[in-house]
Length: 48
Image 1: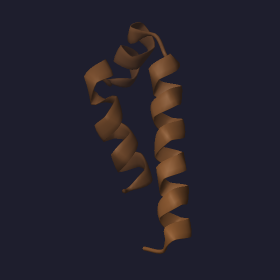
Image 2: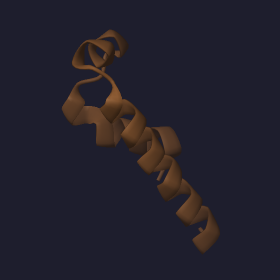
Image 3: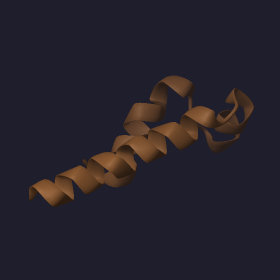
Image 4: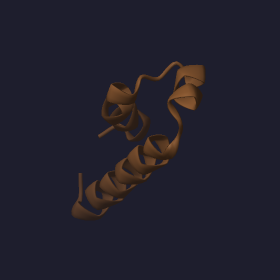
């Protein structure tokens, strides 16, 4: 993976983590996501 692609993937990962982190626990539960699962969900979403 090139540097530009890696950097773009990392930025998307951070954006996803931030957005999920701002959600309430109830909203996360509605999506079937536990707060401790946010990093792995974000990784799979951007396929790092």
